[in-house]
Image 1 (cartoon, rainbow, N blue to C red):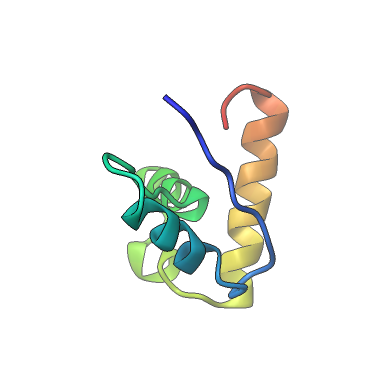
Image 2 (spheres, helix red, strand yellow):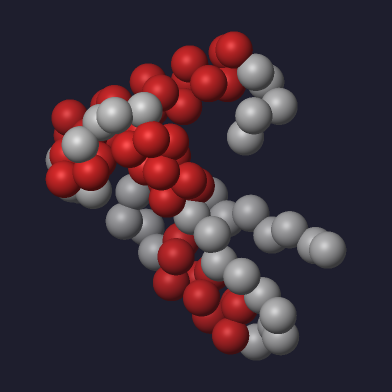
Length: 77
């Protein structure tokens, strides 16, 4: 299995590029880091409606959650 990571700022086109690559590589799967993070937040009891919003408050929460998870378990992500 090979993993290709694409990084960049919000709304920079990372998902678009990932889908283009995946469309040319049979068996590829596109997974967004934010998607996994949202699942964790919802499981922790944060309302899905808030977690799914693309607002500064939701982004700040996701960044803080991700940083806390990384601090408690460097291998989590």
